[in-house]
Amino acid sequence: MRKQYRSAALTESGLAADPYEQFARWFAEAVRATADGLLTEPNAMVVSTADSAGVPSSRMVLLKGYDRRGFVFFSNHGSRKGRELAANPVASLLFPWHPIARQVIVGGTVERVSPAETAEYFHSRPHGSQIGAWASEQSAPVAAREALEHRYRELADRWPEGAQVPVPPFWGGFRVAAVTAEFWQGRENRLHDRLRYVRDEAAGDAAQDAGWRVERLAP
Image 1 (cartoon, rainbow, N blue to C red):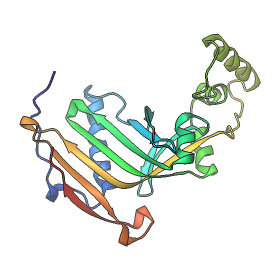
Image 2 (image 1 turned 180 degrees about the horizontal axis):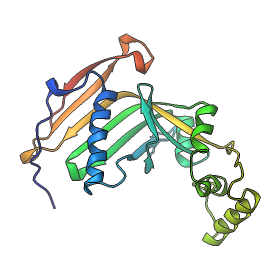
Image 3 (image 1 turned 30 degrees about the vertical axis):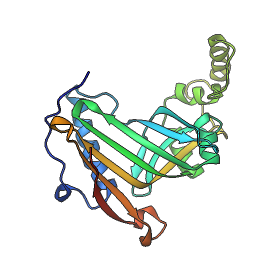
Image 4 (image 1 turned 180 degrees about the vertical axis):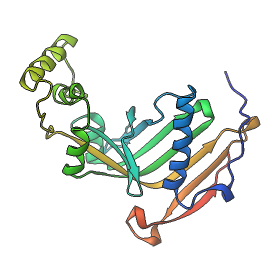
């Protein structure tokens, strides 16, 4: 099973000066494609991590923000990805925008966001999602669906709709500061355009202050 891509070219001269601006351009186009019914959840991304032994794992997560500091998502710190990031704070992000023949792949270092930033986002979530964060010991075995739902009901009784739900101490945000960012555009005859930004380490450790060089990769 394969599809012939007939998309416009991705050229070096058309790229933004840094990957965050280029991502903003493509993300806006992905959002427009969502409005047209071509995509769903353009902020859905595959987050790949690895444990201290290098064994990888992947899962779908929603991007909740980005700027020149990095890409942010939220999770239980005790989940598999949370434990792996504590032991090995690097990750890869993949945005699979296949209906518009595009992918973005970000590789970078990871740090937790501040408690204030976590609290601001947590309290913007629907009440049910706030309760769900408390109810689920993410990635841990659970005896039955009923046990999970029973725990949810207990917590919903403790913090009914309209009550201030505290931020779980085991839950928060992660920020991926890009070291590389590849923009993939599907092209005819599998001769895809792949342009990758690579952070210039000589520019310093702060990702937002980094310089970038661009390299074209063979498809």
